[in-house]
Every structure is written in C-alpha cells, then in structure tokens.
Amino acid sequence: EVFWDMCRLDPSAGLNAATWAAVMVACGRVAKWFEVMEVLQEAVAKSVTPNSEMSAAAVNAYANRLAWEEAVLLLALAPEAQKILPKVVETCAVAGQSAEVTQLVRRQLETLDEPQGSAL
Image (cartoon, rainbow, N blue to C red; front, side):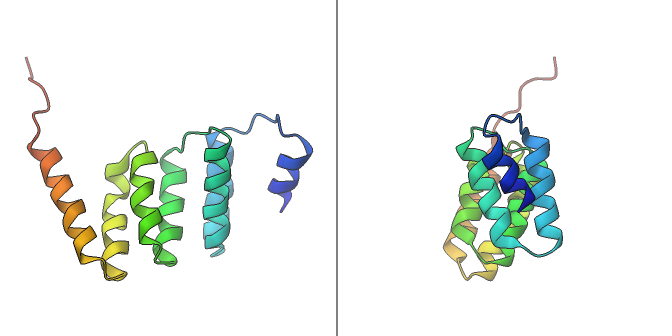
C-alpha cells in the first residue's frame, strides 16, 4: 500500500526496475500473488523493462495462481527468458495445458539447434 501511495503522490518519481522488483519479491514472500501481477502490469505500463528478479517473482505468482497464459506471455518480456522457462513449462503442465508444454519444449529445442556463432 505504501508503494502505491508513493506512485500516486509523485508520479514522476524515478522508480527503476530494482524498486519494482523489490516490491514484487516482498509481495511474493507473503503470498500476495495478485499484487505481484498487479505491480508487474503497472511497471510495464510505466515503460519499465522487467529485470530477472521481476520476471522470477511474476512467474512464481503466475504458477501459484495457475495463470499459464500470463506465464507464457511473460516469456516475451523477460530479459533472460531461459531462466524462467522451466517454471513456465511446469505451470502449463500443472494447469493441464499439454499442447502448450509441447510447443514450449519444441521451441526451446529449436533454439538449441541454432548456430551460436563461431569460436574463431
């Protein structure tokens, strides 16, 4: 609540990704999953690019709510999507989305087959 008050009182405050991540992690630690998702949406609306901490907090919130569609969409926003991919796949599997799991795994395997550049 204090965080939202800060945002309302000074909309131009220099809230960076680390600030948003800290709020998301704190909400996640007390199982406020809806608030984690709400904070991520607000950060993105304010043109904050999610960092790895924000992505991890969000994917955990999505997993706890079985919000598999949001978890999949988060892959497009996450700077290091590979780090959260296992949790996204798990979320889809638990939610009974076997076709989505197959698609995510196939996409991951395709990226492994792509040439990574030469060592020369």
